[in-house]
Image 1 (cartoon, rainbow, N blue to C red):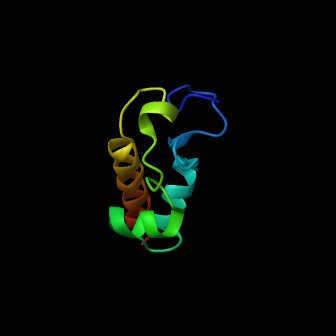
Image 2: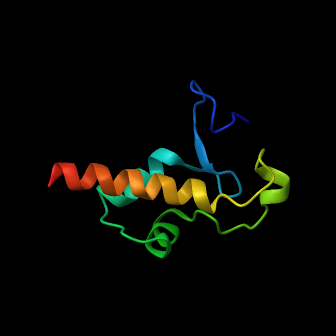
Length: 81
């Protein structure tokens, strides 16, 4: 399984537990209008398996990584408006 922080990783998972990519989170924000963590979770299923200790190579919750992807999506969407 590729690590999210490797430059050439494909796919780049933001949430390993649910296998949701950074690109899927950004798409939920830019194309589907999600604004909050809750909306992104509902659209993508991110953070729904709570198995971070086993699946995330960083051994911690992916909340910050998911939030960073949301913030990037919000930034992209604001530039497109």
